[in-house]
Image 1 (cartoon, rainbow, N blue to C red):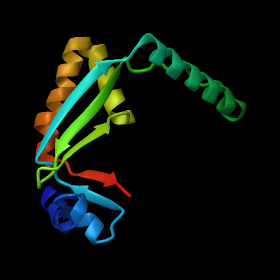
Image 2 (cartoon, one colour; image 1 turned 120 degrees about the horizontal axis):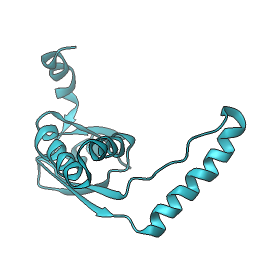
Image 3 (cartoon, one colour; image 1 turned 180 degrees about the horizontal axis):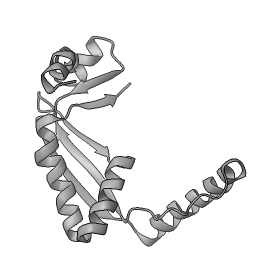
Image 4 (cartoon, helix red, strand yellow; image 1 turned 135 degrees about the vertical axis):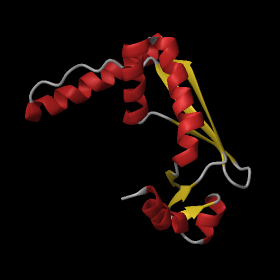
Length: 139
């Protein structure tokens, strides 16, 4: 599907903010952000140990059916997305999805930690803002 075909399909579904989608009774909506900021913080040793432990417990449960599962090396950073909707409403979301974590791991392996963080920031704040609509679920 071409970019123009996607726009024709998606534009009628995009809302300015959550209030607009709530008024329409929608539980999932697309919102085009006005601005995006990505911030990160280094996870503590305890947070990393906890993630490894939880993954190991899950791996033991799954390995009964699927064979051995590789140990998880958790991402050393927590990422947050701060964004503003079209009516200047401010929002904050954890970025703990596989795509962000996977991108960080790939960039860190290629360029090192500092450059990987810069690339993540650039990708979200400058490149994705131009073409992304966020699908957000709310009550």
